Length: 158
Image 1: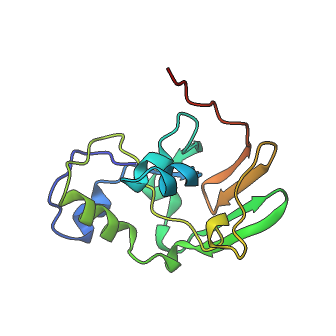
Image 2: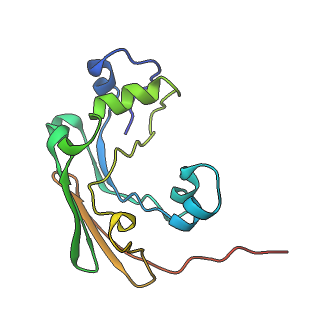
């Protein structure tokens, strides 16, 4: 989570200084919205119950090295994702620096940094979430989350 207003950060030290804490986020995606409705990918990540955060915010001093945290997700009790933040394409500081070039980062902003391989869309055959599925995810030092998938509300048409 960003703690200070930041724009055009020059180096890793400035980027890391902008962080007030780290929080576990389950980056849920609505693939139909992303694939079949055109436009930006973001719309599939913006439903009201998506992006659950918690269970707590951990300060950088308490967390320590955020660049090698183990991340995992179980889908219906089966481990689907297991990796570390060391596997990310960009470091945490690199992600923040990059974003600060295109937007002003404000206190309270959350930046999802990515997910280990194994998301349902990447499996062969793809496996998507359905109502009743359970998800449990966690990260070293950031705790665990549990979700049960519910049915989506359908669009109202006139």
